[in-house]
Image (cartoon, rainbow, N blue to C red; front, side, top):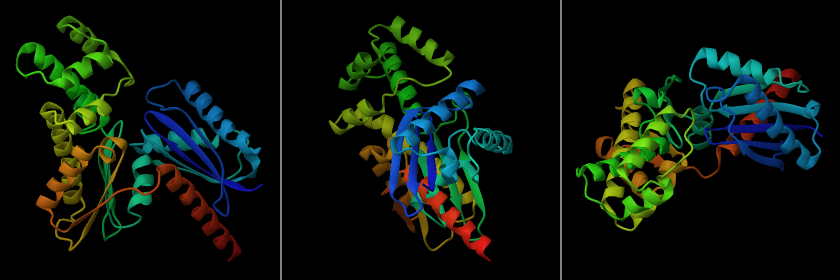
Length: 316
């Protein structure tokens, strides 16, 4: 059976979806992340092969019957990344089809905007990607946390939440209910334990604890300290959008489509509403768009469309 594959390789999960050429979902699998920045090459290959095979096993698919594969992945930030990851997928074995590997921001942009406009992603990490009326594409952000990157992301919110708890011990911030929620989630109850936890977090190569959900919950319950963290996150994500609009010279466009993507902003009412307020305050012509489908669906749709286009070219 002929089929296509769409992949969403994120910082937390690796999602695979196989669809028939007509668009019927044949199999879907969600596995652990496979970041080439966080894992040794052999482990990356092992995980990718495992996740794809688990998806194919659902409908008895054979690798040789795949007609197109599109992967949207985190960590594709340079030409070297593109070459490395494309070769990695092409050497998986068993596949004889074209393979396209793109930054996950580009796939998300295609899914939400599908043309001229920009997309701000705030999930585990953060980045903004856009296309202007000249067809020029640019991205802003996506830099490592070690150089103050990942602005307004879930990782950023987690670090800010821990810093808030540290400020409580310093007497700089007043405690509110969210402080106890953070202590319970992290199992830290003294200044020493917060210091030790922070040191371990600094040494970690991959974020394992996420506090975004409890910060959102506390904000919804009226906790001003939690809301303040999310307002600051929104200021950061607004900054990504603002910078990209300037880089693409779109500030004078009569209409600017700005999409948002990623659980840290889409699923946070406080974050998304403050982001929208800030962006419209500076650019009244902005139309904010939210996702209606997942990146996985977008990657599969792109694979299907690229396959159909290749068939038309071949027919000519």
